Length: 260
Image 1: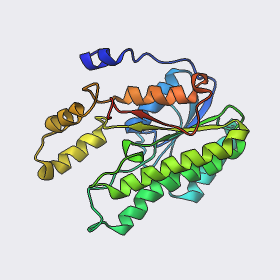
Image 2 (image 1 turned 45 degrees about the vertical axis):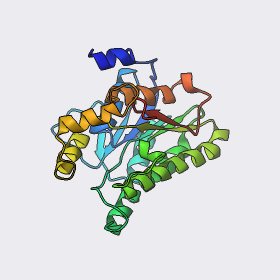
Image 3 (image 1 turned 90 degrees about the vertical axis):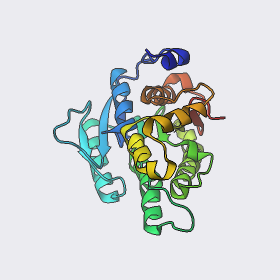
């Protein structure tokens, strides 16, 4: 455990969630994969949906290559799994994309529509086909962003999509609350995943910063002086999926080291 982790406290696995069944979109890589790993460690089982599935990779759960913007494929995959294995009582919507930097003047509208389709419509479509069979006590957690509550001069499309995800979360929480289904979101700040490191590298010509310099600059913006880790995000998802958060719904939980 490094000094930053020690300052934040233990990353021990929280209370067991088994024998619950989860559907995790975007669960084959990045934060989604980290969340699946933590869920599996608690005893939960489930299904992973991801647009990019590596046949040579060993995943914790059965994994199907599905683009969440393909409603027909999404519906057929979810319904087939439910018919075979029973309903899901947990959904984690981690499928998402971050476009290249842009501003209102040079924005590509096809890119805007694609970002909204993956980040928002994909989440709503997944709920559409999972919720009908969910029993009382089920949970839904969407992966939002710090851009769910603030803007970004270089990422209009992404910020708009994540604001919309929060609106969907709050609306679904009101609609599904009487059925005993809770709906929340987590808001990661920068997390040093391979995807973020790749974006930092591609932005280097504009920012003039190396990966290490960009990460240090982000760390300095936080109250803890450290970035959240994939385990931090995963533990928050497990908290919102468990009985410890039984009275929490319609909320966005920031996991960002204190970007205040």
